[in-house]
Amino acid sequence: MCSCLQDNQKIGIGSGSTIVYAVDRLAERVSAEGLRVQCVPTSFQARQLVTARALPLTDLEQCPRLDLAIDGADEVDRDRVCIKGGGGCLAQEKIVAAAAQRFVVIADTSKRSQRLGDHWKRGVPIEVLPMAYRTVQLAIEGRHGGTAPLRLAKQKAGPVVTDNGNLLLDWLFPDGDHDWKTLSVQLKMIPGVVETGLFVDMAECVIFGGPDGTEELH
Ligand SMILES: O=C[C@H](O)[C@H](O)[C@H](O)COP(=O)(O)O
Image (cartoon, rainbow, N blue to C red):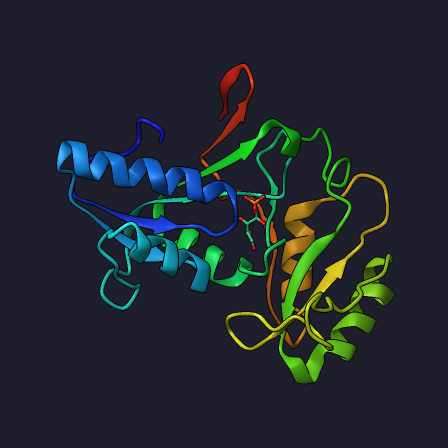
C-alpha cells in the first residue's frame, strides 16, 4: 500500500485481481495501526472484498468526496492513460475515481506500455445501454474504425451484463497513434454510451509491481 494512506480517509476501492492485494494490506494496516477508514466499492466484487475483510463500507451518497481511490488497470501508457474494464466494472470505477482527490493505479509491470494496444489486445471496453448496443457499435466502427464486438459471457449463453444492467462493447481500435483524450470525449458523446474504459488525466500515480520491487510513474 502506498504512502498516501493516512488515518481518517475515505477510500474508493477498485475491482479486479490486483486490488485484492491492496485491500489485504489496507486491512492489515487498519488492524495493526488502528487507522480509521471508510471504503466505497466500485463493483459487486469490491463490495464483497471490503465486507470480507471487515472494513467499514460506505457509498457515494454518504461520502461523495473521497480522499483516495485505488484501482488496477489493464494497460497503462507513459502518460498514465489507462485502459480499464477488463472485468466490466469501468463505469463505477470511473465515477469513484473522479470523486477522489487522488487516484492511484496499481498494476504489475506487464501492464506497462509505450502505446496503448501494445500489450492489451482486448480493446477499449465501452459500457452501453442494452437497447443501443447496435447503434453504438455502428457509430464507433463507422467513425473511428476497428471493430466493437459485444462482449459475450463465457459461462452462460448471451452477453456479459454489467453490475449496472448494461452491455459491453470491446472496441478493437485500429493500430497507430491516437489522441485518447479527444477520443474518450467523442466516444462518450455517442448516444447510448454510458462510459468508456479510457481513463485519461485521472491517475496521479501508477505503482508498477514486479519481481524486482515497485516503481512509480508520476
Ligand atoms: O473492470 C475491471 C477493472 O477495470 C480492473 O481494474 C482491471 O480490469 C484490472 O484488473 P486486474 O487487476 O484483474 O488485472
